[in-house]
Amino acid sequence: MANTKVIASKQQQVDEITAKLKASTTTVVADYRGLNVAQVTELRKQLREAGIEFQVLKNSLVRRATESAEMAALNEVLTGPTAIAFGGDDVVAPAKIINDFAKKNDALKVKGGVLDGQVVDAAQIKALAELPSRDGLLSMLLSVLQAPMRNFALAVKAVSEKQEAQA
Image 1: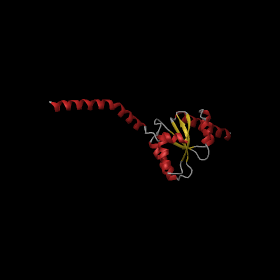
Image 2: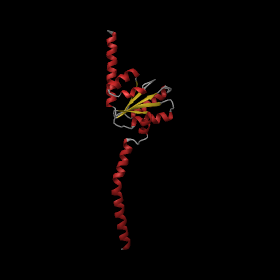
Image 3: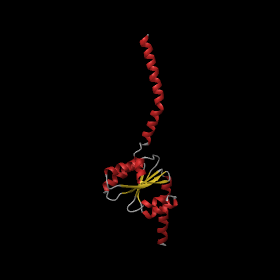
Image 4: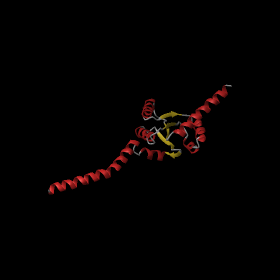
């Protein structure tokens, strides 16, 4: 009877991990071996402030969840101690925070992850981390959209100043 409870508990954990994998826009898998408690706490704090869930999970449970979520290719990176960051709305945030933290702390290694349901390697996660944040991208788009109007206004102003100078 105790065995049945343990199996049911593990199945519930697998179901929760599967749901998180499917719901997450960006999932980053990292090896945290070598980080001390203060460093892990600081990383968790940074991720939590950005609305990202960070968990240390058993590889066997994650493997079962990846198979249920049809992301079995992620199993290749599930070796050794594994911590997983499940991102929310901002696609870039989990990768950026973990990559920036890894630059300051050599012990943290990005193993790979999932981006919009597609399994990606560590190099792709690092490339994603180099992108500007969502707010940065929106401000870039806004400046591109405003440029024609600004240039037109400057041209009109230059023409009116030239006419005033001639008069």
